[in-house]
Image 1 (cartoon, rainbow, N blue to C red):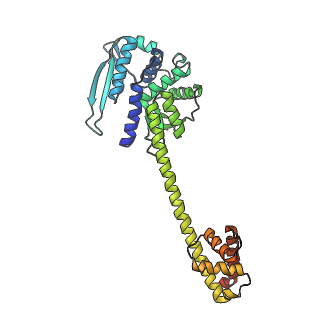
Image 2 (cartoon, rainbow, N blue to C red):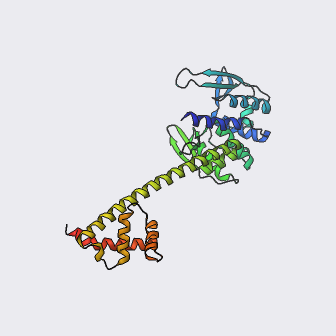
Image 3 (spheres, rainbow, N blue to C red):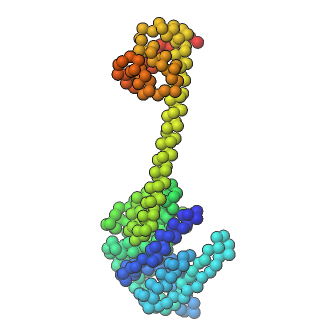
Length: 319
């Protein structure tokens, strides 16, 4: 993933981590994040809950959220990776009220089900999606032509339950796809309009507007490039066609002479083509109209050149 893609994905997450949530929505959000990200540690009979993130704002958000909901302050420390990209990893460890917290968030790490109490309306489903995206989501920068937003989950059964949430959400329709990637079950969106809708659903409105602005600018530039390529292709085709016509005219003039043609309009057109070897059919129609005093259309020009093709065919076959 490029630096632009990473920075955009992080921008989305940081916007979500600085939003304000009601206590009910915050509970659903933490339920998703903890279910996907959490690890239970047992040491000397004491159970602890470990959460990890590589984003400082998410770490701060989790720290304050558990304090607000449960009155517990996680132990927060960070690790600096020495290899690869040397990212900092933040770890939050909760030692107090772990069983109560897991019970209140209705999390069972041994089951893949999602509690209906966490997602019984669109507002809570949205909050649950936020927690999942903060934990395991990513989105490509809109500067890339490969539009892609995904949430990578560890368990197949949980992924299937999670996918059903998209069907239960009544505020929009999402064509969510699933793919197995190594040990992950990845749910993803590929269409740009659905990615924007999902960002708005999450509450990342600034990021959604940024996505749309960049996408529109890039798409307009792409349309401009395609039109330029098309113009060049059409010009090349016209030049090639004109060369074949001139070759046919010269062959006909050699064999029978242009002055011997009974179709005077055709004879005029052929001389005009020799004089204007780069003229388009529309331009030739204008010149011929001026010469004859009649209204000659582009289709008339095309018909006359087909007549030329038929006239020279016998001479080409005898070559």
